[in-house]
Length: 478
Image (cartoon, rainbow, N blue to C red; front, side, top):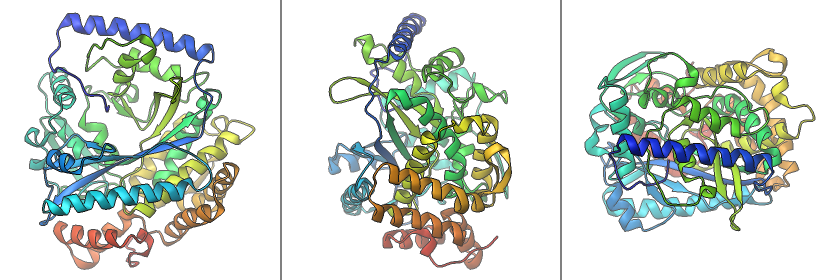
């Protein structure tokens, strides 16, 4: 939901007019997709990296507005809280030395951001959930000064009729707390990957991204702790799903943050239609742009956070295109780790799309969703169903099937073989060692009886080396 809005209060007539325009744009989208009007330029990739600003005591530093002003980099933008920001990438064709180019781009911008932060007596950190964040940090006083965030919070609170949000997570330990607003979302930061696909391949890429989510997350967990409690390998998942919740019913289809309701069958229009039918409009911001810009449809879509989300964008010549946003990955532990995760996703998705028989015919959506939540809970120890839903553990699945698929997929995209070997080699070694970011954090805390401050200090020290997490000193503790 990157679009800014110009007001925060809306009357009944505004909602009525917004819904009218939303329906008109949905009908236009259905027509244009049916006519094959959307772009057939495909395999263009991008990313968004959310990160933390912290002070020298390792607590959140709520200075993002001053930081962004001093930084003056259009690729770095605000996030929900004053102690988070987001680094965006320039879209690039998914071929050749693209992985090295993205690594170089992130590294250069990260260095610039670090230098500015240091000049403000602060530091940057890439991690799914900052161990030192406290519930009191997640208050409206620390919300970024953007109208869209204020309005979102107001609408969520209003639709809950004043009932506080309940965050209840059962993991290795349990957490059960209440929070009055949407700021709990700010505790979760991610590395989101974008994949523009030709319209003719959009359904296949969307479904492939759903299938890939479980194995991808199993290899990448980096968020075990929240408020001192040891929860899931990717505690971001249950945290985010509960932090903007409007309904209390345990109905997957009604949640604003979810794994979705099914594969796409004929068109990605199905996803947008489901959004409109199931989720009430939260931010009815009326804009005077042509329906062909889909501004109202895109804003509504931006307030429904599927873990795998379809997006509408535009090619340089103005032709509309479809993108898949893969939202499951946490930030960190290092840039090279995130690039390895990206290589795994892009390669695996390409392979699955290239299969003669659509893989969604061999793995049910229900099983893909089960795999995702198992991976979020248990990481590499998760039990997963794979082809024809036979059971295996995530570690074996990655080493024996997923990595060879990803390698073949990247080769078919003509990605440089040196980069393929380098980045997928990191996934292989991480998987063999069993040491994801989540495993390292748990092991360090247990081995040294470390508190959250010591853990963050040790994590930051290793992050600054740039070494992948499997090389952070093997301290595995089951």
